[in-house]
Image (tube, rainbow, N blue to C red):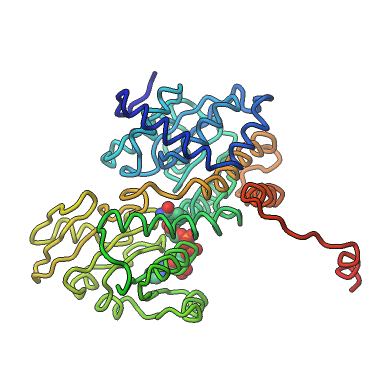
Length: 414
Ligand SMILES: NC(=O)c1ccc[n+]([C@@H]2O[C@H](COP(=O)([O-])OP(=O)(O)OC[C@H]3O[C@@H](n4cnc5c(N)ncnc54)[C@H](O)[C@@H]3O)[C@@H](O)[C@H]2O)c1
């Protein structure tokens, strides 16, 4: 098998157990796969995935295989691959190019390996694979029917490609589905960020001042969950509406220039570059802890922390102590990369079941409708989004009301 992962019998067995655990908690995805697998709608199709290799992702990849696809995948980030899951997937005949702790060059090589399988549909998280497929000459003649994009940062990048008039196949923005961003970005990242920070530092969250940088979907979830753990929340924003929302949600809102001096813990959630800069870090309290959960490792000036500190010491598995030239010691989680995936396991399966149901249904939609869509970006069709909500409620055994005929009549009586 043309795959490159760390492997051993123990890793395969651990990965299998994690896959089974996740699948048993991803009922809606499991139901979708079981419903479709008899007709093998992906038979003869090669799918290329660039996703964080977690137990939840393994359910999506195994599902794609059960629907008949040939599956090739790489990780969505150099530090987020869970090696046991990668080893298990290879044992199941999936082409995997991912291992934990890659260099940026190795990560890039892995994307090339997936593209070398000539996938006809791509599923991306952050748009690294789609950008390569568009701008690397080696792939410019490759026939690609379409792609899907999982996260906000990837949506921004793929929109830029469309704005330049360079999009060469349809892309469905899975992140834009309500049943994705309202749940995955908010509740998924909210919970897994607390998990990642606790595993990295194992300090008390109650009473600490937690600075949440960015109050979008991710920031709202992170702020709510840290607040629930007893932290005092400070929000920094650049958008007046989001800032107002954070203020009315009961949180302190202030510029980073002010927050940097009083925060104990910092969590960047913006998708923007350089939101915690050298001038902020130098003013932080001794002992301040920083981490990022935005997609790329550009939000905190980790280069300044890791390269220009007087000394850097790894004090826990994913925590670096940086002694600054001014004598203060500050801490960085997971080298400034996705703390919830580097220091913990990413989102819980119930949430990813929604995101990945959107993914698999969007892939099938592209297969059927790519010619009709054209070289355009579209959101997840409303019928898919709604269906995922209906399936999720069913899986959670939640029942809701229906409009009565009198209510329907009333609604149309104006
Ligand atoms: N860690 C994960 O598992 C995970 C999951 C989902 C999304 N993400 C990533 O998290 C990031 C945020 O996603 P989102 O869905 O919340 O996006 P969003 O657009 O809803 O929110 C981003 C917020 O950051 C604010 N912002 C931008 N620049 C800022 C600055 N300089 N200072 C303060 N605030 C600023 C924006 O105004 C916006 O409110 C993206 O990179 C996304 O890809 C990560």
